[in-house]
Image (cartoon, rainbow, N blue to C red):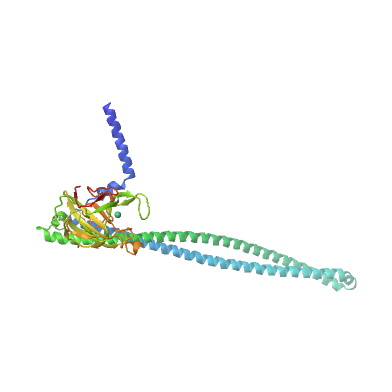
Length: 417
Ligand SMILES: [Zn+2]
């Protein structure tokens, strides 16, 4: 009995696991990604970012070429349409010409026939009686008339055929023109899509450039720190925690003396775009006016500074060790940043001040991801220089923080994660 139950539990677990892997196949792979431990790991992150940039650049270039090729095809189709239109005109001219000639031939035939009729009714019999030579002439005239009418008949037929051919040509050309116009529309839509791709490549490039810049700064900072602080410098194998006099943290402290949680960490409806279940990488803290001092939630080394970013404004990243674990803390929408790259800060260091009001694009600022004065405070596992590009699974709920809307406090009491 127990065995059967165990068997059932086992098979259920397997089904769950398999479906989990199927649905979230990518996530476990990302989570398995190694956190940077050494100087070499930081360099690897930088190298990977540069590789991504190169790939993006190559894709952008190929998109540009595709756009050019499609534009050439559009120009060719337009040329073909112009030619078809002039061919249609030529066919119409030929039809008109033929019609005029047909009219001429009909007229001529009619005239000849009338002449013959007159000849036969008025004079023929009389002249037959009186003048033999006139009979010969009459016969000759009749033969001539017959020849003219039959030759006219043939010409008439040829001209009618010519008209028919040109009418068909006109129809074919009009069809071709329609097809070419359709082709142009398809090509133009494809070009529009490709321009969309190009825009996203440009956006990505902007993001990756920021990441490369901060990752490069982090490498430089740690290289300096490692070389100066380590007794036996191991180069790329140097452990990041040995590179700085990693300050001891008994636990986490709130980054602001007072505050109130206005938006939670995790999935939420975006307050700006209104998009449902969009990811919020930190906790928003309000109830502070612009310029209020922000303290480091944990002591550590400044690992990334991004100025005036379009979504986040002035952003600050600090590598910390709490409870023996490595984290990166981040602070967004700052009015001012008071620290420098590589600077070691304590929990009493004022690292910057609250912004997000005057810096908001709605008030003429540069930061489109804020609507009023607040601090966006977030925590990642591992030592990083920026949030973008790191897996979502690294962006954890700030340890010990009460992730509850409206939760508010008025002292920087310690909270332990
Ligand atoms: Zn936020």
